[in-house]
Amino acid sequence: MYENLKNYLMAENSIEKLQKKEKKFIPDFPDIDHPQNANLKLKSNFFFKNKDVYVNKHNRYAPYPRHSHDFLELNYMFSGSCTQIIDNQRIKLRTHDIVLLDIGSEHSIEALGADDIMINVLFQNKNFNLEWLEKMKSSRNLLFDFIINSQPTPRHQKFIHFKDAPSSIRDVLENIVSEYFFPKDFSDVIIQNYLMVLLTEIIRNYQPTMISEKNTSKKAKTLGKIFKYISEDYATLTLTDLANRLNYNKNYISNLIKSETGHTFIELLSKQKIMRGHILITTTNMPITEIVRKVGFKNGNSFYKIYKNAYHELPLETRKKAEQ
Image (cartoon, rainbow, N blue to C red; front, side, top):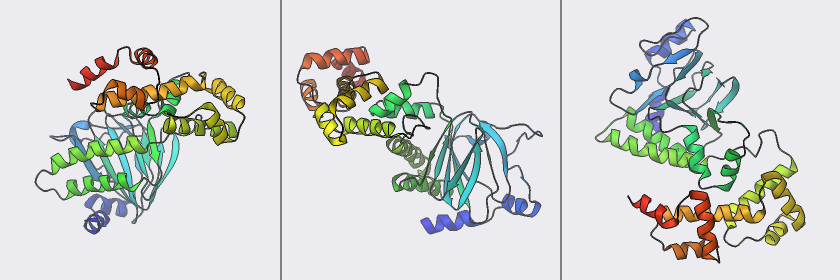
């Protein structure tokens, strides 16, 4: 399958041949409006006629002008490399890199060479955007929750860049592309299901930059380790255990957590326990009393009180809604 796909993608199409000859951008879609010195607007009605997903190979040999769109776009570097300007940031994509562009994001693409193959996967479902991805991840991960909710102003970045995406994401992407370019019975259904797997894999593997993109200090790295230990060992972790792992005084760790997050160690630990409890309540039939014990609460009343404050309802109410 891979070799067939590679051969198909490496072959030059008619627009690539024209761009190679003319050494300039040739509009690749009908009704494309390309006024001088203006941002190109790609219209969704062309891409999504009777389909929710559109896949194509990015045409080589000419720069693609700055453009935006009202749908989500994923660029996958199948081979070679390319340079994009995304919302005024210069991004270099190399083999197996992925960039996910949110609705309304603007980008331009420098000319690709003969060995540079980039795949575009477009989704029209507006429920899928980067804010949704971040919220999904933050609901399961304390670090994401802290990053998202600690911003003094809206920080919503309009793209995310995966360097050397893991094989779990690449395999799903290449399956989508193969089903699209070499369709068989039920390919459209398979693509839709692969899309959900792809987005779930992206959520699973999406790692944010540290607390601040510019903050690479020792303190920030220590805080990152603190979140990691809390997220992984929330059920049994103690402040003394945490301090020993980090080779710091217990008081120093306690003060660092409070000064950097505004919460105590116990508060962060309880938050992580409640988040895990919420997942178990909505995805399993495990008795609530067992969930309380499993996530590390010795006192059921404490669990119920903290849960009610976090989700504004009791665990059984959450479960009933999840079962509907």
